[in-house]
Image (cartoon, rainbow, N blue to C red; front, side, top):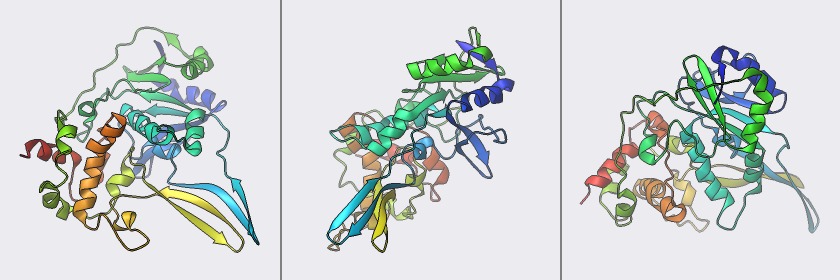
Length: 330
């Protein structure tokens, strides 16, 4: 394993910034999120960020193409992503697993989303192990190892005033090569993640949910939901989007933006029919999708146990409590 003193981190990031557009976890006012690195950034290592790296691959709003109409013809100009290498330093295991989920959606089953694929191809990811879980973390219950990010190019650890790094891919080895003058090869004890308070039992949940579409549970829990969409917008795996256009005269552009299955209008059809007309159907769909439908289609849960939705839900309608109610249901 290669190590360096934590006090040297900005020297390493400055070296990497010569080759990559570097994003790091930082405090920005009351928020924590990944931001472009510069010397003035307030680095944030102690906890996971509130806003995940999802928007670096699947932006909140993303222009897709320009168009220009002229009589009976239409000219279309695709808006390609910038061709620049990106480095994300300090991504946690739960958020890496979320990217693995998004990979399934945008890169498999016979369709490749080129906007997403381009950003994934350009990115190098340095994962950072978690030394202490937050009160709302339950990643291990979702099959995620908090000290080992699945799909990282480098696995990093932070302990005893040092960072340790292990290259896992060719992209990762390139980072090691760039930083070799700063690194020392030595053994570093990987710390165990402490402090897990939530351990929902997932055994049999997906299978049981297959028979609970008409269960009374959904009518019981739905009235508390505000349909505010906070849970879906903060979630690193939610991927619903809408496509809109901005037209000005004969020119305009198409763009996609995040949407939420918790909004009443999300499933509203042009003819006026809405297959999810009430909170019950929308709440049911959210949890069934996370814990049943997605695993059935992709063989992986659409929840990584990051705990963000537990932090932001104003009425405490938590996925962990739903899992418990499913287990208890007759």
